[in-house]
Image 1 (spheres, rainbow, N blue to C red):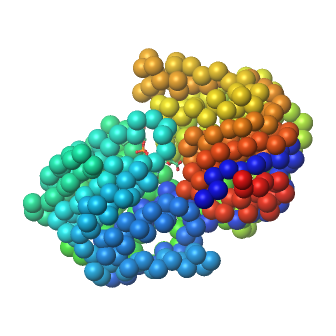
Image 2: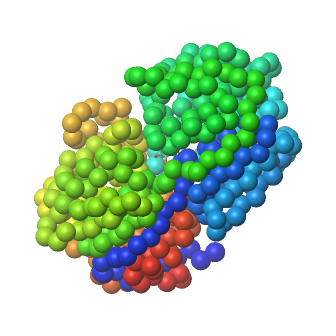
Image 3: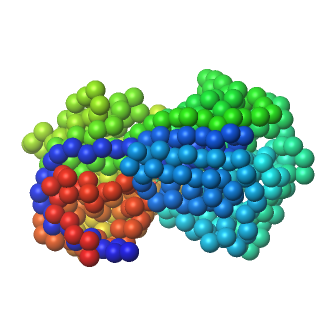
Length: 438
Ligand code: EPU
């Protein structure tokens, strides 16, 4: 695969593109299909590599997966779920973090599960201690092996009381996917309540689960003996939407994102407006544009929902290099999400990273040697460079920077971007970008 993109930047991106289902929901609801006794149908599925990876893992476990890529429809038939060979599962090692979510469903269906070493973006340590603690609380026996983790359920998993030390998205999903078929009631406090999690709860409810979302991040699940398949249309990708919005701002462009929805974007839209961007919510999408004049610097802190998403941070920082004055960005979700700024500095941006918690409040990473705050001084014209994609969102940010910079940049390792951005090259071309795969 050609992993290089030559980008001739310096021109505003203008036009219309479409986003489909959210990467961080679609993969989880694919896993949920394992819990059903009958087939499931998922609509609005984007053609991204994470969908391929999860399809491969489901296939290994006997799920019959059919994907109509143009229509975006996945048919998932779990009638013959079976154990997979460790070597086959291991071949998927390093490709994604989703395998950890197979644990609960496989323990219910087969009494055991093997999870390969996990991949995903290198944006911090990304431990799985919450996941393993949760599974142990349900009664699973966890055995760490050199190439992965083996789990078994000596008897039916038991509902339990779980309190998360931090509202982790994955740990909340782990609890949901395990509790729905456990014996009795599970009470989860300190839960994440991201829109993608609410959509997963909607899917599980369609399957026959009994889940109530109470106040103060408490989710209560009454286990049931049997779940059916579901038919569901995935919510759209709010991270991709914000990425294109940031691209419009950084390049002085005007992008309409069909499929973008306002409720999931509210926090982003507030920030976008404060920086000086304009938007118009339409019936079938949102138009984002740079209104001309100077962009304004801001103080920004990432947080769990309903805060400003960590995944929105990297693309927006590129736009902040074009804002007048000092912007302060405090990353409180991941300890190491500013690695991508090295490339921006090489392109002329003035960004300094700090170990201190800059911004409104202290976070888990203060005084712990993590460069998790950044000060961006602008505006600085960006110049073309030869840059290497570090991770999914950082990679898209590099693309935005290359599009904003005058001259030809070489962006290496763009295969990483295929993990979460559907047909991004076609979309860039539709917006008038001059890009060529090398
Ligand atoms: N954490 C632990 N222990 C655990 C699990 C998490 O300490 O066992 C910590 C993490 O290290 C992190 C924090 O808790 O500091 C939050 O992590 P979380 O579990 O919420 O993240 P995740 O479920 O691994 C998902 C998305 C990420 C997104 C985060 C936060 C998927 C596949 N990934 O990750 O998306 O940033 O939630 O919203 O859903 C991306 O799409 O590029 C991406 C990285």
